[in-house]
Amino acid sequence: MDFLKPRYTPMNRRRRIYEGKAKVLYEGPEPGTLIQHFKDDATAFNAKKHEVIDGKGVLNNRISEFIFQNLNDIGVPTHFIRRLNMREQLIREVEIIPLEVVVRNVAAGSLATKLGLEEGTQLPRSIIEFYYKNDALNDPMVSEEHVTAFGWASPQEIDDIMALAIRVNDFLSGLFLGVGIRLVDFKMETGRLWENDTVRIVVADEISPDSCRLWDIKSNDKLDKDRFRRDMGGLVEAYTEVARRLGILPESDTPNGRGPVLVTSKD
Ligand SMILES: Nc1ncnc2c1ncn2[C@@H]1O[C@H](COP(=O)(O)OP(=O)(O)O)[C@@H](O)[C@H]1O
Ligand SMILES: [Mg+2]
Image 1: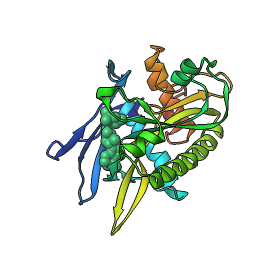
Image 2 (image 1 turned 30 degrees about the horizontal axis):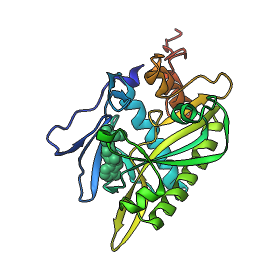
Image 3 (image 1 turned 180 degrees about the horizontal axis):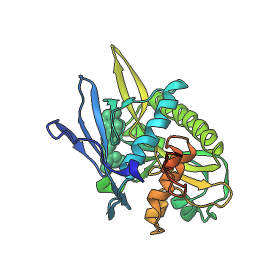
């Protein structure tokens, strides 16, 4: 799988703004921009489980680029400007709202456990949940009351965030359904973007198989980070399959494909 080999030149002289679990943020070329670098690190359970998985960063960069570019194209505002190379993208710097916004369509993970639902049960409607983004506290679930009382977002901003979350969910559900994948749930982050003297809420961070639950429609095979959380193996193969189905990898890069065909002279 040639596309997984690093072809980029690391630009170490740039100022590093933040290093997180899966990505590094560098100062961008212009004020108000950042470079988001996707690492190969996989973490789960608030980084208690950690592994480096070759090729994951490259895949997430491409998949997230594809999703954010499409969101921009349908008028859902995001921080995404453009991809720079195999692992990096240029984004607008935003003031991150410290909430993980989770949208669920089908019961899985913590919701299934908490409410005693069988994983895979269709929910009566899409459900939006908020988690306070704080590693030291294990990202606790919070209600709108907490969000407004502690000033993490205003009531108007919560309305905007929920409207964005619904639009992203509808877009992603349709996108994935079209390629035979069920969007079980996903997490998104939002931020405040200043433009002159107005502020608006935009989708930030990444949307990738690290932050979505994606099940094959027919087999229910997991094509997301649960493969890592649950020690199932085959993570890069699953992410590659998602990218291939979305049409963002050349067919020759598919792990199960025949690969490049040697063209030989007939005479
Ligand atoms: N456009 C943006 N402007 C500023 N910060 C951002 C933007 N997009 C994402 N971030 C933040 O950058 C970090 C990305 O790195 P990541 O490895 O995901 O960190 P974490 O370990 O905190 O989840 C996250 O903390 C995320 O909130
Ligand atoms: Mg993160």
